[in-house]
Image (cartoon, rainbow, N blue to C red; front, side, top):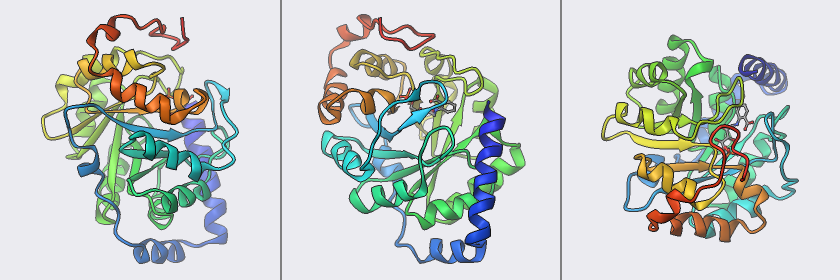
Length: 277
Ligand SMILES: O=C(O)c1ccccc1NCC(=O)[C@H](O)[C@H](O)COP(=O)(O)O
């Protein structure tokens, strides 16, 4: 699944490049106002911070929400207290686009993440040209040399990489890059299995000074508390926010629930499927 997603994303990028060549996108990227400092926005604080995701659909869940106005959704995320916005720009399985990213960038004042299957420099320049401040790099999807090249490019353009891992080896490879922000995704991107305890097993391997992001499988406030207790500085939330009805209220409940440790014990969500009990 992951290699299909990467090859689909590369094919779509090749099509866009045939219309808008690299030189043009590079010039647009360099002409953008400077990226926002995502490391400052996400740096550890008393409460866990939230990256709120604009997510219409996914390979594991199918259609999630229509989201006709991604900018309005992002504004409600910002109002609800999100520290950054993640925009899924992959079009085949997530029904996202760079237009969504541009619209969100224009509407909010907090950092915006391009969440996609980034595997070549063109996609990084596109991200900056569309106004991204953060770009996702998935360790499992990339050769180490490509990972290092893209990481360097992201930083040379003033953006921050969110380097995503799913195992102890991947954390080790990610750390070779000297990342500022490192994510552990509870979702295995090939099987879709969710393991909410993975973050806790890997967190100690992430040195102080690197922002620790727990990604996926947050369905209720207790899940935020669970990640916080395991050492997360930030949680990345998609599905619960786009399906939950009122994103502002959902975000507030996630941010406020963190001070109630009792809730950590009452989570009824299944750690493997992520289904609500
Ligand atoms: O969400 C999927 O089904 C998926 C499948 C394959 C590759 C990536 C996938 N999702 C990307 C993400 O990691 C999530 O959108 C993000 O972490 C939020 O997760 P959630 O809160 O569980 O929607």
